[in-house]
Amino acid sequence: MSIGNGEISKNGSVMIECEDVHKAFEGHQVLEGVSCQIPSGKISVVMGPSGTGKSVLLRHIVGLLSPDRGDVLVAGKSVPSLNEDELLELRRNIGMLFQDGALFSSMNLFDNVAFPLRQHTKKQESEIREIVMERLQEVGLAGSEKKMPNELSGGMRKRAGFARALVLEPEILLFDEPDSGLDPVRTALLCELIKEIQQKYGSTGVVISHDIKSCFNIGDHIILLHGGKVVDQGSKEQLQSSNKPFTQQFIKGAVEGPLGME
Image 1 (cartoon, one colour):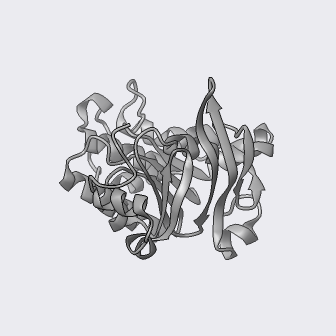
Image 2 (tube, rainbow, N blue to C red; image 1 turned 60 degrees about the horizontal axis):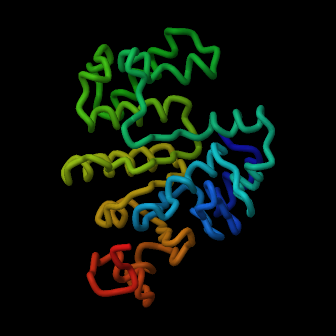
């Protein structure tokens, strides 16, 4: 399985690259020249204060937003330059887990997870059932397939969204604040699950999170955003030993430093 140029995605070290990405909404500049690299086959965590453009950056990767200036490359291909068919192909190879799981309220859990398979493949229902049940088993939801979304806890909804993100066996997995609204124990369990699944499939993971402990537990590569720019990036060891005042203040949750209440 590969996106676009398989040589890049399989053998290269970089799966996603943002080059000087700028994005503004109604005159408000959100991204101000973001440049970063997401290594292939690892989990990268994008962290930073609220309102600094983390989710906006994620939407550029999947082609839901186009930069005002700059470029976003996935497996060596410029996402803003893709036509509709090419974008659809890209999205088939990207699984995305939104904050609340983004389940269809009118469908039971089985049909929610089966939806991408019915939408994007011509598989028989027997094969779809086999895949869906396997994914539900992987995320710890075996036996819950007949439940409706309103019968699920917050953590279960996120895991259901995760199962749905996995059914097409995507090469890239994007997680938009998967730990939002979860207590510390369920956050740790979900992060452990993300890690296990990513290692099982060898996929490239991008996680947005505010939780410093989660970031350093799950992330192989860390990107720190502030003011619409990348202020630091590297391995977790590199960030922990960084001499940049903002990095140290943010990862330690310190009062003293360049980041204030504004």
